[in-house]
Length: 396
Image 1 (cartoon, one colour):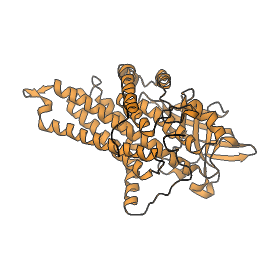
Image 2 (tube, one colour):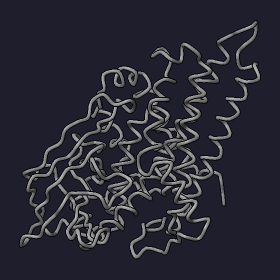
Image 3 (tube, one colour):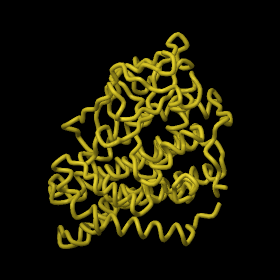
Image 4 (cartoon, rainbow, N blue to C red):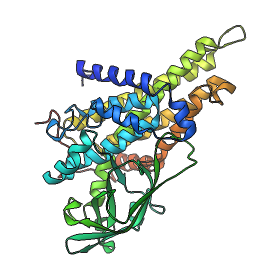
């Protein structure tokens, strides 16, 4: 495996980093404190062609490889988790799922404007009583002629008030359990749809997160994604893409923790010398660096598997679990290095710690990924190639 980035990838990294430094870093403290999602950033990301970075050019995207998406997520989360989350949901969970499962008509109607950044896509799987246990969902979609009548509720949905299109999962036949779940493309303008933001979040305060409500929403049959009963399979394939972007973002958060901690270690003195020269502080920096390097290797390995069109559920699970755990620990160490100042808003590390917790929970808790990895090791779980895989890169 070649661990060097291409010239195009290095240029992409530089472009996103400059964007983050100029247009996110100076304002993120204010946005975080206000709990405000600034949609102007979304338009700027679209202007840079970042909303469809790994979508083929024929569908309005930049046609870059999947590791280029990882680079975008890594650099955005260095600025703030909220903006990486927006890309994870829009591109990883929604657009990449459309690339795998949508008909040509659906791609032209929904994927193309999303890849161009003209429309925003989101993902609706989690419910108040159904998180890790997907089969516990209560949402239903009943066929009625040329429509499905959707009723139910989703929660902890990123971009709930900002998105134009949602991938929503509901039972079409509850007697079949997992095999009775189907996936639908739902437009915000459909009658009976509404959303509500969740306030008072511990972290990712600059992001828009909330609930979706469906009251007798009429969904055209042509908006069924895949076939009836394929919803669980579609959701799990979507999570392979979303988890990849979450893991990549965690690498960026570790980088941000390192950057802030190194700067502080050179400025702050105790006992007559810079605190970075104290052994236990150095140990925390070394632990951050180890987590950063190991996480990057896991993430970009997954990207290469995606580039080759190889199923990567096992590898993605491991990358998501480890990178998010490393990021959570790095943020905790970064705050400790800053001491009492780290506990204030004068430095960014308190925000890093708050933001680092959610990725340990969403898109598969660390406990779910631990169980998955144990099942792989013991031979209780084996993945077969999917009939619908992401297109291998370079795209035709």
